[in-house]
Image (cartoon, rainbow, N blue to C red; front, side, top):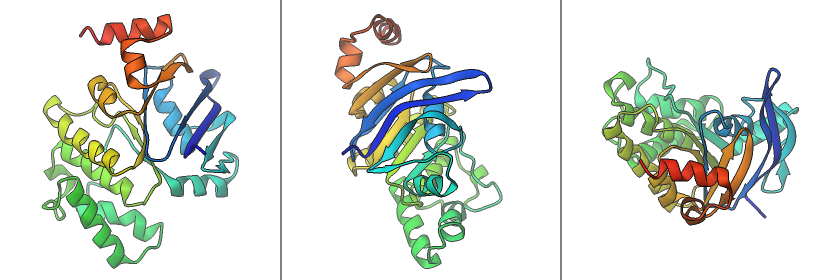
Length: 245
């Protein structure tokens, strides 16, 4: 049974159909990368999975539990199992780093403060920020803030982590420190769906690559297949261009 199964997922913005029937699945502990040109619907898939963009069709299963996007209770259960990290860090600027990571587990999840604090310290150490607990976000680099955002998402104890272009707002020299944190999560067996333009990283870390264009899945398969021997003309054109640069 897939850990996450997306079947014919549809979504629209106003009259514009953004997702036109997207399907893919992911096993527990796998990494699936959504790639494709800008505007192809990749980020919308992630936003729809957590209910930020309303689904207009299709279904999504987490383990054997179907998400009912019209049900607040069902969406709440899904959000208990899925966490998302965005391109922008969205940290609370008036809170210290340790408080940014602990506020949701204590206020929303109602977990014991001492347990949450210990967990947050462990997660911040895991992403290389054990010495930044008392810092404020504006005292950190962009790469450090994005690693805090990853730790904050992990503090919710998700089964599945969604990563939406988490390096695209960073200066090039800061990208690798964030990618190293994601590599560690993959090694630890975290199930992840990521949207990324970092193609070398996608090739390295992904178990499956889903190539999207125009709100549909054009082709999917192991990285070696899509990068070296794509079956469709559209994928061949896309990967041929990006791999030449």
